[in-house]
Length: 238
Image (cartoon, rainbow, N blue to C red; front, side, top):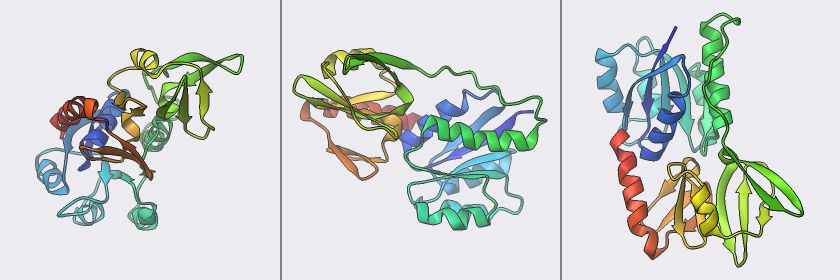
């Protein structure tokens, strides 16, 4: 059984990331991606949808209002940057509630809830993905760092600080430029001479800075063009 999915979010970067992660799961099939609830409404007139990945805060029509308008709503996993919507989301029988910035591990946990409800336990969930990692020397040890745990990286003179989920910053004697060459360019972006950010962690951006939750990171002048190309490319999926 394959779950026919519709991804709805007005953030082009979130659309890109959720689409990529969904493609890793054999039991999920992405039918379309939409950048508004109104566009999603039109899509659902002609397509059978089993699972919605649905943003809550969107212009014109919120995700919650959109879901309430459906006579026979599919299963839904809400995506939002605002935890105060959690109670209302679960009142609508949401499968799960993903708070931005979303980690790959948390995404798979939500997807598992859907799959386990629709197939026998013997079949399980078949995810074709190996966690990418790199090894760096720190404090006389060689440390394994999973790329999906990295939030952002900051240069500090002859050292770099790697900020990771649920971990204190890892300080390594290494150059930011050398590390940039080792990182996948579709997952990480150099936005400043002192900063590299994980694209999936970005919750908002302008031409001058990117936001990761409450953290604001400036975009350096020499990286503005590169950043505009990246953000423009992500809109192709919207």
